[in-house]
Image 1 (cartoon, rainbow, N blue to C red):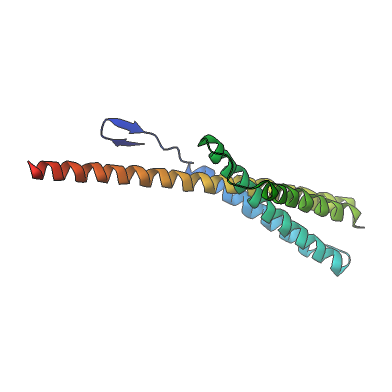
Image 2 (image 1 turned 90 degrees about the vertical axis):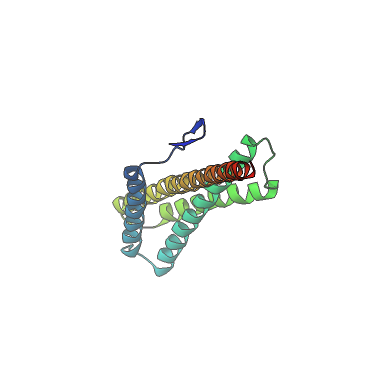
Length: 168
């Protein structure tokens, strides 16, 4: 919490424990997915398809998180979303295509059901932790921006006060 003149501004930040948990969860999810995919039995083409699917899902999860957050800020600011409708279709379509194709690939593979369950749970853990990581990183960035703006305003007030007292 920072105090500027007579106004108190509270900048909410995540705790270090939360940040550690988010990064640890993401790292564990990546590790579990990498382990499952590296030991994946079956054809090389199936393994390549699943690796591409997991990477596609991961990248579209980050893209979707950014898209939603950007539009939330545009709505809160009273302006219409900056994105054209086709971009909305690309973002949502990419996410659902990635999830659908990866799920389809996982279900159609002829591997042990326990192995499918491991890959499925680790995949969903990866997507969930990616959304949480994206939110945590964006929250930190926004808090840093607010803090920088407030410090800039404080410096400008101090400079204006100093110049008005030196002019007197």
